[in-house]
Amino acid sequence: MAEKDIAEKILLSYADVFVDCENVLMYGGRQKLKANEMQPAPTESFYFTWGRGDRKEGMHNQFCDKSFYHMQEGKIRAQYIVENETRLERRQVLRQVSYQGGAYRQQLESKQAVYPVIITVIDWTRKSACIPLSLHQLMRQDGAERGKK
Image: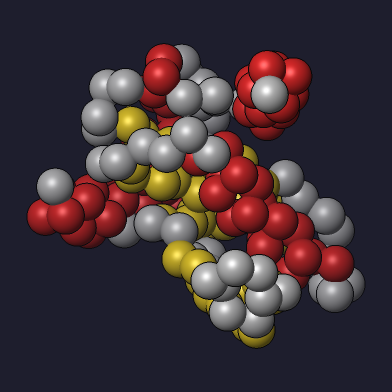
């Protein structure tokens, strides 16, 4: 499966392929994004953890698969992130939120206008119905689990 993930990352590094995927997956096939308006964006963000259990305290980094800025008139209008998942986890939505949080954190210290960060997860497992697809669903399920104990 790792080879498939690498192949997807390579394909998505081409702006025209990235735009085609986003236009289909996010916009129902409408041509909202154009390849010549895309610029590569950072795929690495950083976070700090406080030591608990077997987790080590300190700074850590995380990488998303592919990210592009949507540029118009020399300004960033949005950041698009694509994640290829070959193994889904129950708390997958928290990983997505952490990628968005890293991108919004960068905006906090910037003088530029704030722009949305949009994440698309391509699920290659075909098991997405088995995990919470939103933070709300995850919190509801965790609340229900706590209530059973």
